[in-house]
Image (tube, rainbow over all chains, first blue to last red; front, side, top):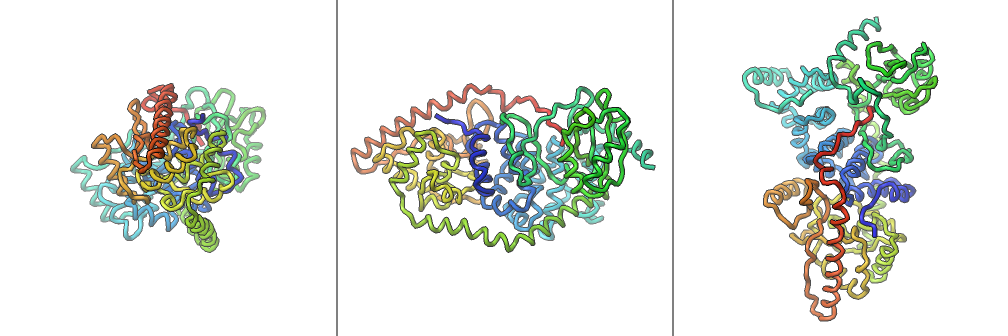
Length: 196
Length: 384
């Protein structure tokens, strides 16, 4: 009796059936499997599929966007990393962006800024940039976020400091940056810097 | 000029302990990356035997016009190397990184392409390729970018998506309509005993596949009105209702309890149902909503339930580990009186059998080391 669905066999069988079916098999596998490694692998697959706009409609149909958003609050760091990577990949598309904003997705993304996983943090920074619209700007460039970016811009991690600087220079007003700068002089509140 | 600035860059880099893999020791064991970015090349997806290998996710941050090439044999072959890479696009700059950690007898190079796409292709083609007897390890090197280059990279991605999305609008409108047509067709059909029998038979022979889980996922909207079975022949129908289920406690009760039990009572087809099928079927009925709940509600709901330490939940929490299972946990099977003695008798027979089967499942999983969730050794993921 089969109690665990292995990926390779089943997916090979389904490959001929088309993109939607294949993606659906991945989603099903994710739900059915008990193995954390398999979950991570499937999530990585889905996150990579999220890079290609060809797949966006299918991913929406399969509610993979919700899957990614839900994974952001998981304990497993790797799942979080892959999920935020997936969101980063697909959030530029207008429909996806609206969906994520509608689903109140900005908050969990902001929370990812405190992760100790540097890839997670960087994906979160980029995702926030991409999710910034005139409507969402207030949330994506809230004071604690700007303050966090200020600290990131001083990081020894070049990739992180680059991203933070782009965020500050292109998505925040000088007033916002100044306000955050003043704040950080006086207090230590805000989103903690991940360990380098 | 370049070599001076490169040295400056290198010095800066070595202050940063950011190397994804430990290069001060032996070179990273190349782990076949299963989750490559989808390029229509399905061959790469899960191309290995083991499902236990670490994966990577490609994002715009990870990619770069800069490529780092390790494993170049120290034979004075820089010219040949650059020529190889130049096949894939114009190279803006290139340099040997003398102070970058390298295996004995090998060198490390940095190549900057004019276009990101060229870097992508070059990486794909030349990574793990033999070069003068040595295997090259090619990866992106976004840490060498300037702020402006990072900015441009992010902008380019924006433009690409904008263009790709606008092109696909018309094409996709058509595609969307197709699966939806299938949905409406199916909703007209009533539950067919024959089909159920067929799928049960399928299950018995071990021929079932993951899509068999589909119709029983409560978030599938058709579940309340259509219980078409996932036999192999009806594949397309089933696959039209994929949907990620994050709250499985929503199956309409009538579907779960009355019809299938009735049918299966008549057919006796579920006694040998594989456990995984059972997993999907047996859904706790804590609420009768047959549709996918809005995500925010789920989060609050989940939090509330976690706080209350609720037993019956749509998230199953294994008492031995912190693993969260998405999908229906094996709960108590709801007892229904079907106003018929023989039906009730059959139902309780089946129920007992299912309980037996359910009990045997956790044991088989118990072999998994219990600390896998909490203390899995962090896999060295190959830098991509």
